[in-house]
Length: 335
Image (cartoon, rainbow, N blue to C red; front, side, top):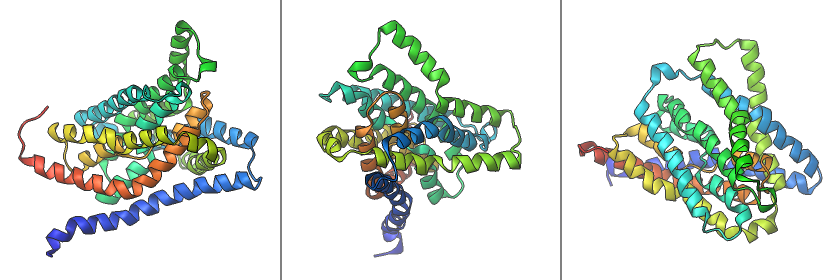
């Protein structure tokens, strides 16, 4: 078989190891949290404090740091940003509609959030960088995805709270607006974009201090998730967990990728669309669900399943996206 014919298989083999190296440490960190809880190093009170710290400090600063360093004005591509936003909003609507199929109303909010909210800010950027090196599109992908991810998550988790926490429509609308305007993650995103657009320089002392704090966000969030995981409850919710996993990894991407190709997206833009539509569920899904009155068991199950599934599924989807991009170069019609 010629080298040209073997190229797709070589690509798959190479990136399978990349995906394993990128995702298995995440899964093992969750397992460490679960193990630490079992042997008594972590207790419920401490896990709650970790969740609060990550939600209110470490994760917002992580997003602020990522967006502050991006040069949006130079790299701006409104079409690509708009398409990433459309995938995010459309995926959220599809997930909410599909959540109506879940019998237990108390977990519908968790289902909808975990099914649409992608991990573009962490694994997505690493995946694009592994294929293209330093990619300008990664920063634009964050602008089109992350703000809408978090705004929709706040709306979904407030409107679809468990039975015991539902409120009158007027109060709920006020709480939703307040929740969006005061959400620490959304404030971190807004702050990072503002600092970038205003070209505020990064002072070394400040940036290193912020980086030291933000480096805690992912490992602490993962250990808190693992420590909160309850196996028996997770088994009881396995069907909605598998449904949300399918939507997150494949269902939304099956709709979005052909539309991306017909819209004229190519190469790294196409892979960016794949990241938004089909990457694993964000770790922040669990953190936000727990901090907004939801149990979190279904969310942690979906994060674990999508993280593992990404290892063996993502490469094939990336090859499909690349082949679709090449095929559509000869297509002249656009949406």
